[in-house]
Image (tube, rainbow, N blue to C red; front, side):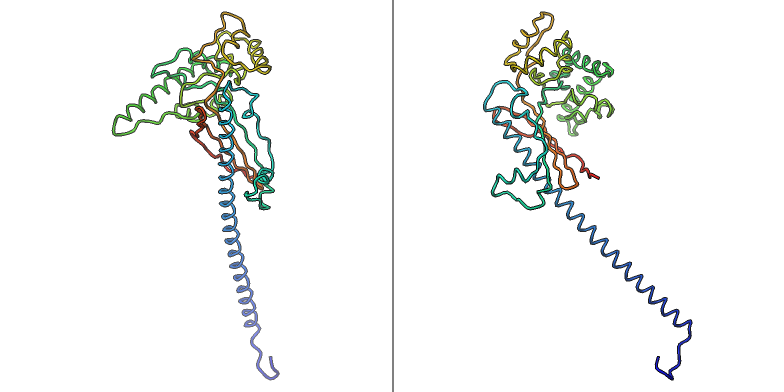
Length: 322
């Protein structure tokens, strides 16, 4: 204040200071909110960009797997665990693959991306679709499923329940196709058995040994594990199963008769409807780790000669690593 001018009262000076502080706090709050919204937009844009990039890479991995299976089909012969398709891809830096392609995008962000995957024989598992044959219960498949359930410490009565549920769903679907309103959906994947009342714990227990394919299929003797072999071959012991797995590791079976001769017990019988040495259905799994985010994809493919087509595919939830 200039000399001689009256000074404002002390309470007015305090009020002016308080108003100034409130204005500063309000401005800081608005600035912080604006920065927070901007950060959220940036994070959302980055997440969407990562999702699109991951989708493209995983689609490429699926095409790569189809190419491998097509080339394997070109060579013919039995399908076994010594073939290139059965060798899993260990986690590797994605840039190492892109470097081989001069036209590939090799930006620095791919230096932190890692890809891994594998192709597995879907016919190495017991196909629960075999329970129904032309609308009727298949007794051989029923007994195989009962043996598998018993080996897994599950209730063998579930086998008949599954057969009845699958048959009812197929009958209803056929009736719905002829009517104006569609019938209930027929389970297409193992997880869909929940539609028939199977709990998640039982499905998880079955997953390594059973599957649900769109057609009746034999078990591949060259790829099935000991548990599945004992379930599908009546009278097969653990020692017999070990003899089969050890024998095929030295020389893959080219026919069912070769496996039969290795066991050499007349009461243990193999048949073409339940057993084989080649496969048409394969499962492809891929995982992309991009910075701190993991993307998973699974697909079922069917190979007929050189035609390898995708029957279904799914992407798992995005997992954030700590």
